[in-house]
Amino acid sequence: MAVLAPLGGPWAVFIIATLDAGIFGIPVDPIVAYYVHTNPHRFLLFSTVAALGSAAGSMIPYIIGYKGGEALIVKRIGQERFSHIHGLSEKYGELALIVPAMLPPPTPMKLFVFSAGVAEMSWIRFVCSMFVGRFLRFLILSALTIEFGPQIVDITEQLVKRHLTATLLVLGAIVLLIVAYNLWRKQRSRNAQQSSAK
Image 1 (cartoon, one colour):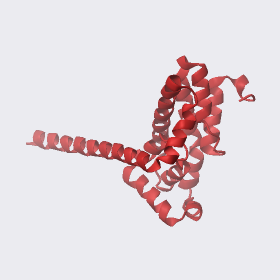
Image 2 (cartoon, one colour):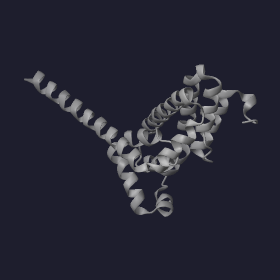
Image 3 (tube, rainbow, N blue to C red):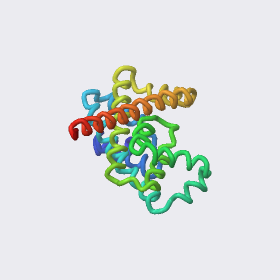
Image 4 (cartoon, helix red, strand yellow):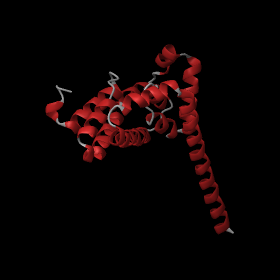
């Protein structure tokens, strides 16, 4: 924080978010919470630059996966776990990135990013999905920080660690609702086209 302070809040958040997503795994949530707590009227700016940094940094593991990093991931986490995450990426596409990107640690976000690369998701869809997921996450974090203070970061992480199953069930329900809505919308569009054709 002391080293990055001369750059100003937004640049510090962007740099840390980029490093967190791409290389070192620096905890970015406390940084965002700190700046939002000290400058609550700029919460939208901090959420945006943090999401941009996360999306930019995630390009590193995405490219590794895209260029053939499957063997590396399988060696590290096992074939079964990789197949599960990879299956989610292929089945749900953008949602398989947006939903995990909204979760705080200890969500294994880099595994989902690697899998998106292995699944050869287009980089435009990848970047947009990462930005949307991270932006929603930091927006929620900002709102909670303004309401409860920066200590909400520790509380949220503890809740996820202790109630991971419940958290995943809630997110699964949200995903199912979104999928059902998309299917309903597509069916409605098909019905409208068939009606107009008649």
